[in-house]
Image 1 (cartoon, rainbow, N blue to C red):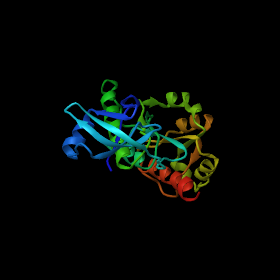
Image 2 (cartoon, one colour; image 1 turned 30 degrees about the vertical axis):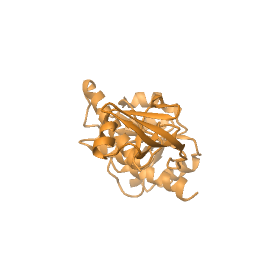
Image 3 (cartoon, helix red, strand yellow; image 1 turned 45 degrees about the vertical axis):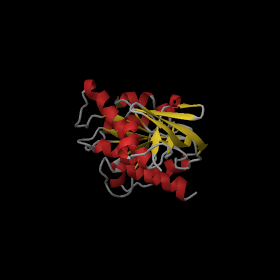
Image 4 (cartoon, helix red, strand yellow; image 1 turned 120 degrees about the vertical axis):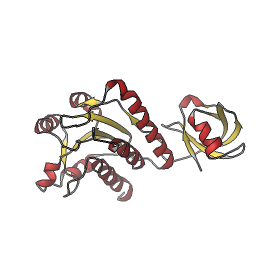
Length: 250
């Protein structure tokens, strides 16, 4: 059954009002009509089974039939802080990271980031990434809609790092040195409901100065296995490890 994310204010009483691009998708792409059923989520706490009651060019109104209990979310909240990579790699991270259960994404401008975003164009980039996250969340039957935050510098990221219970930095030098305990230690310290922040560097990795600042801020250095991963692979490895630790082993 098709799934759509809406704002909370669009779920009023026992009806859901759908507008925007989803109207075209439902009526023209999926060719649905009155009486067809869809699933709607407010992106935070409520998921409902609905039946389409009316269709117009501007909006679709659906009647709520029942609430749905969804167990598709990770029991911990994972924020991926991704060093700005080249090309469309960030789009890939957001899409696949959403499928794997990430709660939010923060693009981070680091000293070795080749890519520098133009602040005037950043809004459109964030808008596109948010749309990718929404489509991926619908496809993977997420209940929660991940957010894509504005770009931060390392200093800005460190200024908000106290919001997280566990902070991890993917550090390739740890893998080269044969250190494989950091990730396990970090996962074992996480409890259901906790918030974790994982920072992944860009293609050139992190500078020694950046790593020292992360150490001072309480980040755990972690290798993601004995192999050196690409910047777009590392966050997906981490999310897969979290899923295995919390959803398979328990």
